[in-house]
Length: 257
Image (cartoon, rainbow, N blue to C red; front, side, top):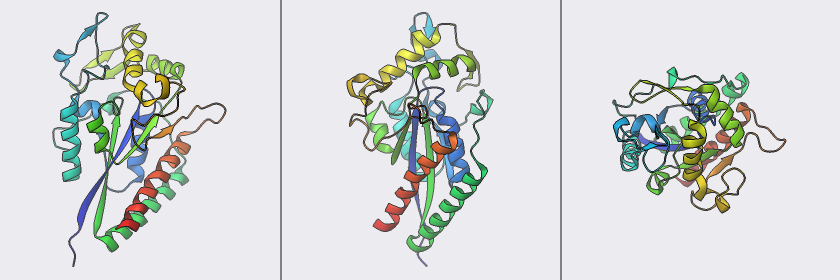
């Protein structure tokens, strides 16, 4: 009997703070068999004492200083090689305030069954056990080495006003050390927004992060815009869209094996 090999598929779930990427990751984890969530900022955030001071505040958001990208690249490689998150990865995300955005129960059951069936087929016919690594990060597509580690890539883009409103409503964050962080009154406009625009301007034509078309910086990037014009997407719609891409990815692997 052939030995079962583990194949890890890393799924990039990027977007600004408060864009819904963590909620999306949790829904996908409930659907995809053998799936784990990797929180980029928990795994490889820079130590607090190394963060620069800008405008009188510690900058937790700038792409050139907030994340240790060489360590993140190695971290993702280790996840891919082992199929599991290292023991020292601990998330405090459950302590943060999140808006409840459920999906339709029928949708979740149907998608979970679809993936159970196809992954069982791959395991039986190709002797491959698929493990999903759901990589949730607000600075996920800035560093090319990290981008190349990801097998498929999604980016949630919302209007800046929506992001600002959600950020101001959340206020309190739990840091990687487990401490509480409360945004100062002008933290959005002085720190968060400039860092978001800087980290994503090369992804969009003309540096237009809010409305620009995609450049070729992130190969195969799937852009999801829940509030685009008059065609708003529910969380159910977003999950369905992502699962279509992931299902086709598994089908392609199956056909190509």
